Structures are given as structure tokens and as C-alpha cells.
Image 1 (cartoon, rainbow, N blue to C red):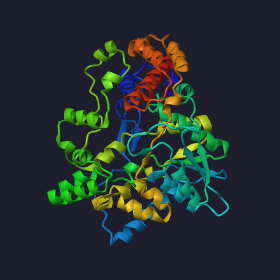
Image 2: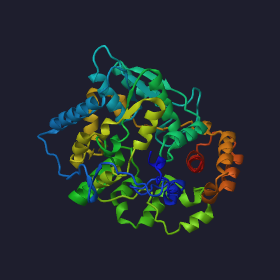
Image 3: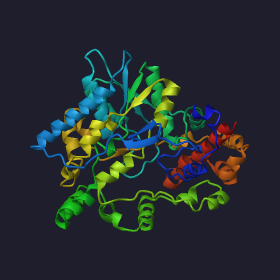
Image 4: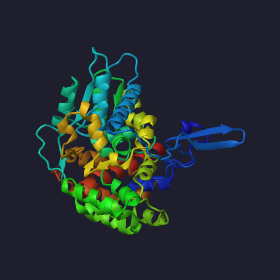
Length: 468
């Protein structure tokens, strides 16, 4: 809409586009267009004769919530979850759908919604799974197909469970994001199954689709990052007890325990090096398909770090929440399918409650998220709450790589001088020519072909389409 105004088009914000090519977040208020800023999540902008004013709609004070006993915390958790989910269920007459994986977040939302529906209604629970017959490997402690565990939650509440074993083709998703998104979407390999769930909800008559995208940062936060808080607040003895018990549980390695506890004390370059070393992540500069000449011209541009830690996990979560803006994706889905996606775990009441929980409710005696496990025991099956394996999204990602179709998009975007200047097209074409089509579960292959290759094509096609 802004671009349609006489003075709306001022060209591209090339710093934002280069950050997308490098797979690092761009500035919170920036867009891909010069002269157009976005409003950050949780902020209000007002205009009057004197100009504009930006202020937060709410900010946590991080004061601990102290209740009488464990049971009181469980009741408070359930109450705030029920209120948030019920608010996001509002609609006129159409059926209600929800994401349902094997994780805490979507399970909590879907189970709560199913309990709150009237007796004559049934929740449509949608689970993404790989194609039938897929036998690819998954990373350590990950399960490629979550549908069996998700089915336990669905059966417990009489949900209408639909397992979606297809993803929209990657080529189609790249074209769709140009049409429906105001910025290139940076998680294209997962957009295929997300879009398939949206379209399945639409096909089954649903107008609202619930999800739990922000649960790990809000209601169900916890885990090893809490160790830094324990050391800072309670000292070495308390830290050692929790660290030792966490290791004995078998869910954590000492490298992760030590990094989450003390990594924030290291220089940022050392933090980056350790993250790459232990998570097998390669340098974004080396993997990125940004044109080397253009990259050198952008050398003064500071890059955001891969995942730095702080001594206060609560403030760290809050800062991360302020950078996450799903509006682009949500509006695109609504425009494409007529289905409105809502996340109850981003509700303000959830934010207030989760930023005030005591540390022992996030990690206690080596058990991660003890409050979540106790509170959800009345609605989520035990096998889901205490599963040792986590789901692996888009585990059949290699089947989405259509080298011929992607090469056609590359040829189309090469008509743009801006795209040629910003993107290393010769290297991109060599990579597509070398793609064998065989499943490759090495993380280096995933980083390149599920990450940087489609991202470069998406940015290039985005540039080409808007130049038209």
C-alpha cells in the first residue's frame, strides 16, 4: 500500500537484503525498502502536530511471583493458559483448528482448546509429518516423524486428527512469498509444511488456526539457560547441584551445561567459535551466496551474533521476543488461504506470568520445565511430557529440492541488475547443477540447500518482482 503512493518507492534497503542473504536478522525497525520503517513488536506509535512518539505497550519488571505452594503455581499456570487460549478461540461459526506436534507448546494449546470447546464441537488437530515411506536420519535426540506422539494427545481429547504428509513445493513457496509477503520469508524450507497445514485447515472449513510458536520463550521456557541465573543469584554451590543433576538426567552434555552457565563471560568471537564448533554450524560468510564484491562493499556492516548468552535468561528472552515479528507471515497466510493464525502463548497475560516465575519453576533438581510438566499433566499425555526425543521439522527436506525448478527461478531473477550485483549467481548455478537429489542429512548440506540456496533465490526473485 505504501509503495503505491507517488513517493512510496525509494528503492531497496540493501543492508536489509544483504542481511537476509547472510541469514542474520536485520535491524528491528528496518524493512527491505528504503525510507519505510516497521513498528517493532509491543510498541505503539502515535502522531500529532509535533511529530511522532514511540513507546512500549508494556514492559516487564521481572519481579518474582511468590505464591503459597507448588499447587498454587500449577493453578495459576492453568488459569492463565485457559484464559489466553479461550480468548484466541473467538470466531463466528466456522470450525477451529490447531497445530499439534509432539512438543509442549502446540500440545498445550491444542489440548486446552479441545477442553474448552462445546460438547458438540471437535478440534481439528493438524500434524506435519514426512512423506510415507521416508526413512531418512535425524540429528541426535530428534525424531523425524512426530505423528504417533501427537496422536496420543489427539486421542485423549477426541480431536479430529489429520496428519499432513506433504509439503508445498519449494519453488511454489518462493513464488508465493513474493506475492503475499512484504519481505522475503527467511525460513522457506519450513514454509512448505506450514503452508500445507494452512491449506488443510482451509479445506476443512476452519477460519482460525491456533499455534504455539512462542511457547519456548514464554510459558514453557526453561532448561540449561537458567543455570546462569542460578549461579548469579545463589552462588557456586547451588549451581553445582543443578548442573550435576542436569548431567545425570542424561538430557544434557557438560559442554552445553558449561556454555549456558558461563558462555556469556567469553568474548563474542569466542562464543561464535564455540557455537560453530559444538553445533557444527559453518560461517555464514562462507556459506552465504552474497556476491563477494557486494559483500566487501558492505564490510562496515555489523553482523548480529549467532546466539550469544547473558547472565539473565529472563531479560535475554524478553530482548529476543522484541525482535520476533510473525506479522509478515501471518498476514501472508491470511491473504493466501483466508485462515487466521493465532498464538495464545504470545498473549500479554502469558508474558506477564512467564516473566515473573521463580527460577526453580524453570529448572529444578535437574528437571527442565518442572512447572510446565506438572501443570499440563491434566491435559497432555505422560509419554509426550516426558519424551526424551524432540521432533525434527521438515525431516524430508531434501525431497523438496527441485534443482530444475530452482534453476528456472535463478534464470528469471538474473534479468535484474540489482540481483546480479548482490547475489553470486555463478556459484548458485554450480550448486544447483551439482545437486544429486539423494537424501543428505549432514548439517552442512542442510545449511546450504535448505537455507542459503532457497534464501538467495527468494531474495533475487523478490528484487526482480518489485523492480517490475
